[in-house]
Length: 508
Image 1 (spheres, rainbow, N blue to C red):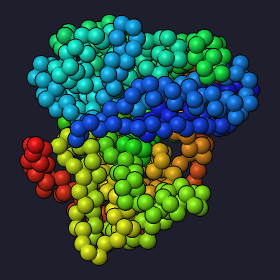
Image 2: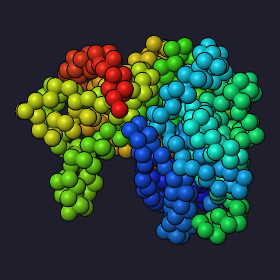
Image 3: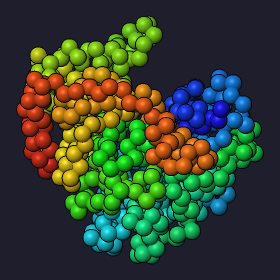
């Protein structure tokens, strides 16, 4: 039996899973790490935390499983997208990574659009300039920290920094590179035109591969630290959402998935390039060679529930620890005691600004309709419903582009909740299913690793062999119109407060 490693480098932690070649999870390990917010709207992490977490979790799964290291033939890494990692000439990290949810670069986005031109930017990168993307972060450093920019010899994404530390290779792949906004997305290569206009040295950027291509192998130093063999191959891997698509089998036209991780995504595969001219959803290269994906993003999905849990659910945390269960089990039970609509309480999940469909870094979260009758159970349910409504906003944009999936696959931490899945089914009015293996991105990059190692002839073939789907949760007929009434009010909250968000943002 051959084995494959999938590493999922997330915002809250890194999870490594060892799979056999049939897609069965053998062993997993997770290490968490902090996110730093030195100012309102900023978000940073230490890249060394990611690397240390990867080394620790790889060693743990190998030791726990007892699998011979020579049988672990290949590995892939899934990563949080858009983060900026800058290395100097000695390959040392110059400054903390500015990660995907950071919102400091609004002026840099204006600079990019003015220099490149909006239509030209859409033509080349398939997306408008957004604060979340890597390009605006790089230009922010050039504008505000010129001494750090002058030291920079290499620009990497989070997962590609971990790849470099494990292999010594400077490499990336098309799905993650699409989110840097320096890639010519239609042609799947760096854009010399855009880099020239913005005076960015192309030599700082890594070589671009397809997601299932082999980019190198484990170095001697990394082999000693992790317990892997130096023969273990490393493939391109994928951005977290592209990896989740592979891990749920969304690798063909007509398939879509929703993920509720730190951020939330509605994602659809397309064999033909499709671009929203309004820039409300992202078009990126996907992890299937020669194909793309279209996705809408909710910035603070699971993050909204985590924020509420960490700040207002101390009693549940103590009880959960005493019972030996996850705190989310108790918060889900509590939320289920509140009715649909949370007793006329609505939550807008804009803790970190918003991408789809508003493209607004100034907007912030709201509890609307709060009264003295409300209990914590209502606030918990309102948070979960608000995230669901925001994901439905994403689906609405995709529907306008002709994407109307028959079944939605759910993944991510929130996708494990039957209550949240039922909300998705009722609000989106379509069946919501899960895969039997719920590892999502980790399984996705393990599948890519299997293709790179020659165990399967294509990504589609590997998915058919390694992924099985559970029966779907269908919409409950009487729930659909109840949610629809609340959703109509939810949709009006952003427009009603748009100018107030901007005014709030000007307060020192």
